[in-house]
Image 1 (cartoon, rainbow, N blue to C red):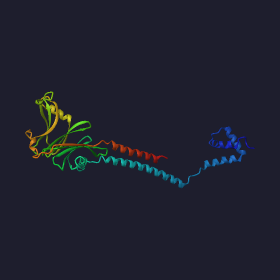
Image 2 (image 1 turned 90 degrees about the horizontal axis):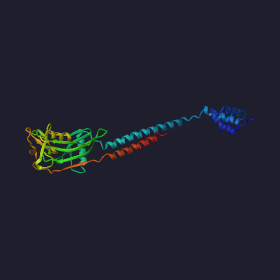
Image 3 (image 1 turned 30 degrees about the horizontal axis):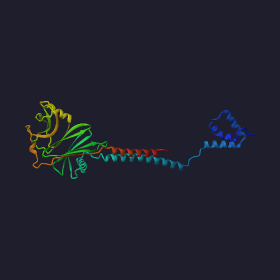
Image 4 (image 1 turned 60 degrees about the horizontal axis):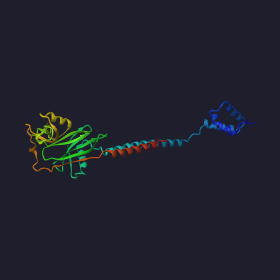
Length: 318
């Protein structure tokens, strides 16, 4: 005779019974039920058989699943590589100049072309302040135009042009002064070109006043002189250092001093600037050009990186 437990209750309890989660009294009741109910006993034996001998996934299905997993990993790695490559290419489209003077000349020419279509830059000298590259150049299309260009170094160790200054010269031996700001500090860039052997010194000329105020009778010119070491050069001086020199080298106290021009001197200290004035004067003038900040470049790179992360996570998600 069957036990008092209904078959439906016994079969509901079988999973817990098999897992040994039922109490001793419940176990005895189930076992007593098995002695009188072949249906429940066979159901129990069937469950036990499944646990002892689980159904194996066909080998072909396992291979397919492994292949899918490998494909997803490969796709994720490909997304990472493509993201890095695209970001680098976009970054390098801005930071692409090496220290090669040919590359720098092309960069300066292309940068100035929208403002002066006929300009053809030829790089003369280079100098650096930290990660900033300063380049002096002349215009091959117009012999009297000279200038400097500012480049900044990128993470890829290449340079990006950000600014130019151009100035015409009335002299065959050229010493030009340009003021520039690098990381919020003022510098004087001095560009020398085609200096002859009788030029031993060049000067940076200041206007100043010997008394407070701006009376013309108190105005003087004070020059800070430097040796000419090469007929062609590009020197970069911190403005505060040169300003301090003009004050310290003056016999009198100077007021409201400011740098205005350059001058040339012979071995005896005589000024000979006018000896090198061109017979036909150039049309005096200057120009400058600046480049926008990199905000949009970084926005595009951020978009590419974001899409790359999203796709990579998609492929790595089970």
